Image (spheres, rainbow, N blue to C red):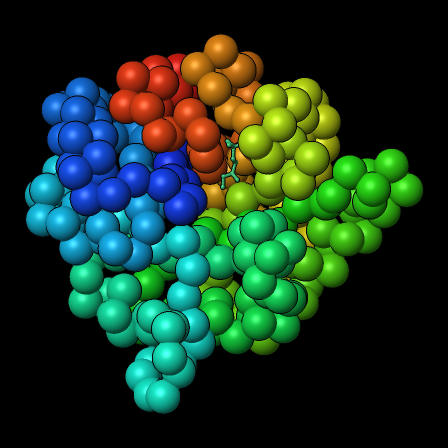
Length: 253
Ligand code: 13P
């Protein structure tokens, strides 16, 4: 299957301007001319989106925000709208990351509102889903993820789905050094694809990109990517160092 493969770096709340610039300059240089079978995405904090956009313009690196609000503008102190993200050069925004769900009251309903607002503004989304350790141990992984997918994507049309990427990030594997085994991850990816198939049909299900995230590093990327339904990675810690992020990209080729 010819699915788009995407390696994205989620910098989370890291890097001031100077640090961001050196990281992205090193990355840009290293990935120049890399074959375009893989899309490369960086997701820095809001404060450095603009300066990074200036550097990556015309390169093969795309820009993503880490979150968004669902209104285009107005009296919502502290929020950032899809219109603003588009203005600053974003192609994607991440929505529903487990850290947003855990610390900032993100729910499947707010995820759904954000996805719709972003798609209306012609941006693409990376929607994060994943179970906690407790949910895995209670064997509720599939029901939790099924609900996250069904509620998160509720009301979307087939055309909308062309702009949607899913990232499966088991919460217990994020920042812990504990990666899901490739087959453990793939099992959930297949379940996600089946759920998408029930909702949107075969064509969308077989073409949608599903990334894995959670302690991805240069030594596990190749094995993860060799699984049937893993189409890329959403990388946290290892994307903060240009050397390791570049190795991950190379390992995924
Ligand atoms: P780590 O790669 O640091 O485990 O983070 C994964 C993640 O949350 C990416 O969004």
